[in-house]
Amino acid sequence: MGEAERGDAAPRIRMSYWCAKGHESKPSFSSEAPIPDEWDCPKCGLPASNDRENPPPAPKVEPYKTHLAYVKERRNDVDGDAILAEAIEKRRATKR
Ligand SMILES: [Zn+2]
Image (cartoon, rainbow, N blue to C red; front, side, top):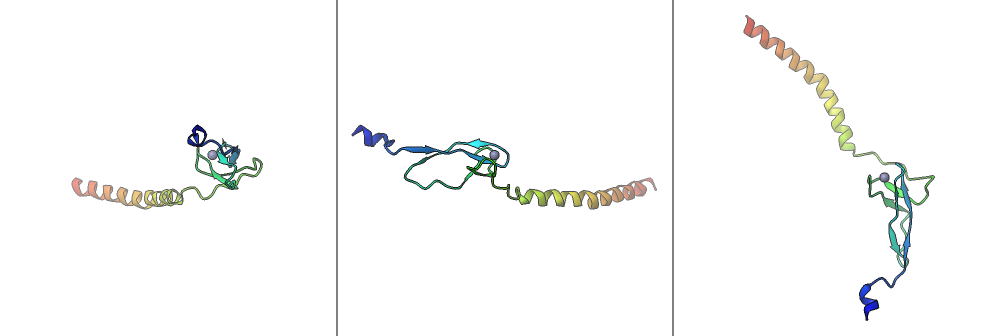
């Protein structure tokens, strides 16, 4: 009775996975379930594989951030000039 309730009758397999950043994670799997080739690194979220020498390449990291950075860059260039010009314009207007 107690055996079944504990639910640890099935042996578990502990696997090591490494991500591209070198983090190691050791999830354990039921020996009855298929072991996945890739595992998401719990530390950084990158895919990790059980081949330490060949971790899966990091996917494009949060592309929206890159895009935002790009937009910010552009805005700094364009708006920066516009704001500066506007400020000069205002100063001229008040000084007149
Ligand atoms: Zn990682």
